[in-house]
Length: 330
Ligand SMILES: NC(=O)c1ccc[n+]([C@@H]2O[C@H](COP(=O)([O-])OP(=O)(O)OC[C@H]3O[C@@H](n4cnc5c(N)ncnc54)[C@H](OP(=O)(O)O)[C@@H]3O)[C@@H](O)[C@H]2O)c1
Image (tube, rainbow, N blue to C red; front, top):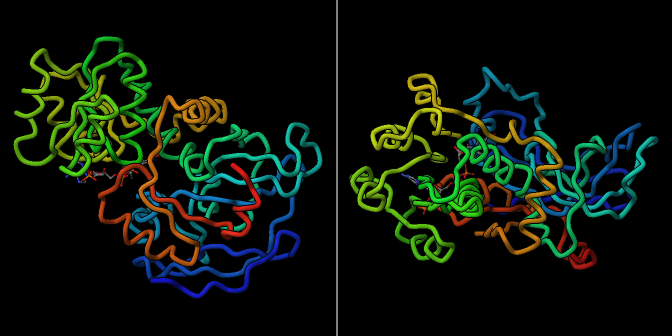
């Protein structure tokens, strides 16, 4: 599933490569094409993207599942959270200069060699933070931040995190640990040891989950961050967790039926939050494991792999070429 990539636009050229799709469908509709390079306008900068994350919500958009709420406008771009370097600064932008390493969120546009972003919608990337980890901060990282904030775990409490090795779950589990909570995290067999290494109590998902969580938390569960969907929110309710201490990013029915929270990226769409998250990762207090990286030409394969829903952390697209990445120390 490696597709032909049209000739790369150089940093100084008027074109750049970008992911586009012109109809709804499977990963095969994704193409890498040349598009005009955006120009910086007042208050904006053009970022040369180094890495861009790959997220499950993008599958629904590309397949047309969310067309009622979030229709595509063909030819549609793809990708949201990214890391990169400022390539051009528009008039009126004071705080950022060319060459500054940044991270941010550019809706349906991030999987492109160049992206134009309002300058106040970027966070400075801490030196030493890897490009791939930085690319996940404003998407999965911010989503986890919002999900944990709304259920507000306190020291000594027990929090259930579903899909605790997933992109959102692994950050949520660690943020809850940093608040002093005990965390029970659901995962497949292959991630149990990894979660235990983080300090999370691993519990296998699947039939019998309620009993396994009850056995792991004999004193009860106080809050739940669901990042997978059914049956996790209802398992938490059955364990006695009040609806106001449950958040789901993946179970609209539980939101409607039980009034659980559904805070996600939108509730932490804030460069100050991204900065704090990025600093936690740079300081080694928060891990963002990178399961796999893909060259831009392998974007179809990245989404094919993502759809398996088995991962440890994030899958990330390398937008910049290996030669360009080598020039840009993290
Ligand atoms: N609204 C928003 O702003 C927003 C933002 C980000 C995410 N989301 C949503 O949040 C959800 C999580 O996103 P994500 O990026 O964290 O997904 P992800 O990284 O693809 O999550 C994969 C994880 O799911 C686990 N899993 C697989 N089957 C499972 C099962 N039957 N029960 C429990 N866990 C299972 C896997 O565990 P193993 O690998 O251990 O098998 C894996 O760790 C998605 O639905 C996404 O659309 C919403």
